Image (cartoon, rainbow, N blue to C red; front, side, top):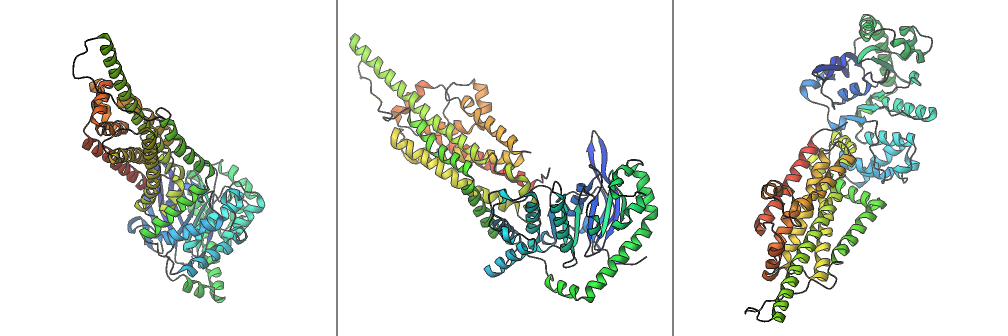
Length: 582
C-alpha cells in the first residue's frame, strides 16, 4: 500500500446524542484518510449524518469517541485548528442582505485578517472577488443576488484567510444544473491551490467526476470512500443515481463491514492517484510557490479593530433598513407626542388650602375644589411619568428583542472564524446605547418643555428615564441572546413589557405580598417611583393621596435600575458565549 502523509485523518470517530435516556449514534466509527490538495464529496441519503460529520471535522461538534488528526496532530487532545486555517461554509447565508458583495467581503477581512495597510487590504478583497468570479457584482446588494451568486459569496468570504481546509455544507443545494456545475468547478479549482483540502457535503450525485474521492455515508456509517469512477463497480449499479436505492437493501452495519474488507484495495488506488497528482504539481513548480505564498496563517485582528468593524457595519445596516429606520423615527417622534397630548397646556400649579377651617358653604366648596384640583394634578403627573416610562420600556424592547437572535447564525459563523464574543457584545452595547441616549433624552426634554413636570431638579428625571430604557434594552438583549429564534425573543420581550404597567402598582396598588414579590423585577416601577420622589413637595403630597403604592427612596431606584442593566448584560454575555448553531 502506498504510504502518504495523511493531512486529515479520522480514526473510529463517533458522535452520539442523548434522546429519551439513550445514546443515539449519528456518526458511528468513521475512519478515513484525506491527502493534501484533495477534493472530496460527502454523499448519502437524507439524514445519514453528512452535515454532522462535517461539523465534527470543523470542531463545531465534539466527538463522543475516536480521534481526528491533522498532519499527525491529534485535534481531539491538542485543540482545534486556528480560525485562519479552516474555512466553513454553512447551509445558511452568512452575508447581510443590506450590504453589497464588496462590503460583505471587506467586513470579513476586517474581522478575520490583520492587514498591514490599506493597499494590502484592498488587494486581498480584489483577489478574492476575482478568484470567485464576483468582481463584476461587487457593487450589487446581497438581497438581489441569485442562489448561485450567494453561494459564491459565501465561498469568497471564507477564502479571505486562505484556509488550508475548506468545508462546504450543501452549497449546491437548490441550484439549477448550470449553477451547480459552476460551483463544483470553482471548489475543484480551489483544491488545486496551496495543496488545500476541500470537502463538500452534497445530496446530489451529479458532477462526481470532478471530485478526487467520494465518501458515502449510510445511517452514520462510512460505507465507501474511494475514487468516483469506482462507485458503480463497488455498489454493483449501472448508474450512480441507483446507489441510494441500493443502500436501502442492506443494513448500515452490513455495508460498513463489507467496506472494511475492501477498503485497503480501494485506498491503494486512491492514495496512488493522489501521489501522482502531487508529483505532477511539483514538476510544474506549483507546490514550491504555493508554500511560499502560504508560509504563515493569517493573523486575527485585535479586539478593538473587530469592535469598530462590527459597530460601523451595524450602523450601516441600520441606515439601509428602510422599515426599521422608519419605525425608529416614528417611535421617536410619535411617543413623546402621545404623552404631551394629556397636558398640552402644562401640568399647572397646586393650590394651597386656607389655614383656618371653612365657616361658610362657599368656603367649604372652595376648599373641596382645591383638594380635587390637587388630586387631579397628582394623578396627572403620576400618569404622565408612568406613560413616559412604559413607552421607554417599549422602545427598549423594540431596540434589542431581535438584535442577537435575528442574526444568531451569522454570529455563530463569525465566532467560529475568530470574532470574540465580548467584542461582539460590546459593539451591540455601543449601538444600542446610542439609540437609548437619543430616545430617552428626546423624550425627557420634549415632554418637560411642554408639560413642565414639577421635579425639584431635571437631572434625576432624565437619568431615571435613561436607566429604565437601558434596563429594558439590556434585559431584552439578554433574552435575545438566549432565545432560539428571533420570533421567540420578540414574543418574550413583548410579554415582559406588557407586565410592566399592571405589576408596577402605579395605577392600581397590588396586594402587599404580590408587590414585594414582583416589584424587584419591574423596571417601570423603579423609574416611576424615583421620579415621584424627586417631585416638588406639594406635588409629592398630591401623588401620595392618589396612590397607595409604596415609593422607594430615589437612591434605591437608581441602584435597582443599574442592577437590572447589569443583570441583562450578564445574561447577554452568557448567551453570546453559548454555542447555538441549531
